[in-house]
Amino acid sequence: MTMAGNLRKVTGLGRVGGLRRVARLARRRPRVDLSHPARSPLGSSVVNCVAYRDGVRAPRGGDLVDTVERVRKQGHGFVWLGLHEPTNDEFAGIAELFDLHPLAVEDAVEAHQRPKVERYGETLFAVFKKVCYVEHEELTETSEVVDTGEIMVFVGRDFVITVRHGRHGSLGPLREELESDTTQLGKGPSAVLHAVADHVVDDYLNVIDSVQEDIDRVETDVFAANGARADPGRIYQLKRELLELKRAVVPLGRPLLDLADRPVRVIDPEIQAYFRDVSDHLLRATEQIAAFDELLNSILQAHLAQVTVAQNEDMRKITAWAAVIAVPTMVCGMYGMNFEHMPELHWKFGYPLVIGVISVACWVLYRGFRRNGWL
Image 1: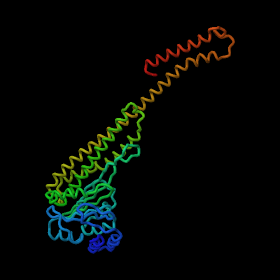
Image 2 (image 1 turned 90 degrees about the horizontal axis):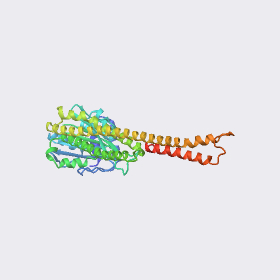
Image 3 (image 1 turned 135 degrees about the horizontal axis):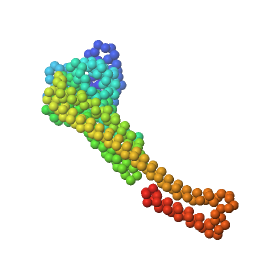
Image 4 (image 1 turned 180 degrees about the vertical axis):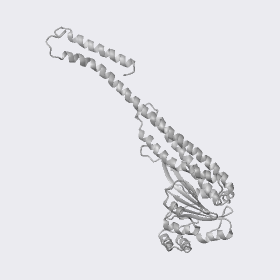
């Protein structure tokens, strides 16, 4: 069945007249093939819609509404609906079908939310910041290092809805991995929530490892022989990208602890132990980010210190050469005065003597400055 037929059925459940726009918008999109277990067709916000019973994919039959009604009638199993950047009109029928809170729906559609976990009646709403490392041949002061997206998860007694925003972070491979572990998937929607959280946190650690390589390269350049010539813009760029990573990772700590420690109706008690493991991994990521921030501050301070030292060395050299040049300047300035009676003015060896005195004085000053490391 096409997406248009699917959404027309959802529209029929609502009392709001605006839901009819869902079907009209759906007709403008290409037809959606939901038969593939994980991959998303381009041009539609619906990625996949699958029912699971005892951790096993149930045979497809009917549209989204039929699938939900069948799961609820049987009294066990759940529906996993995946969406990618849905609009308000596209999400309206789904919100009506699953009785989602308007505030959570608004957050899921608008995106740009802070990582959090909220409860709305019998529904749990979680927001995760997805991060991806941007490959680059050479780090510059304008290089993008970390790209972020968002994954929102609605968890109910018999459904889980994942809403993804951004170019990266497809959940197709995660769905395939879960389907290969029927025991874990058989624990219900909370198993999907844990899998998403674990997947997101693992990506944090992978990105952190890649960022560490960039930091190591910058550190090597700064402490090289010509470290004072290093570009400080790269250090600032890394700090900006690290700040973006920090905004994604740090706020998730408290929500994960709540999922691990506080009883929630829609969370299987056996799954809570897994959330504690995810929380430990997140703590490791948080500590590494804090360490990177301090390390970048130290690298920046070391670079500024190197610049200051280089400037002082330049000033010492300039001062030393100015002192050397001051000797002939003084002597020549004295003999350049237009006095008739001056010492040795008419002596045959006066000029060679003055040149010799100037040369010896300059050589003595040069040797002294060189011995003290000024030249």
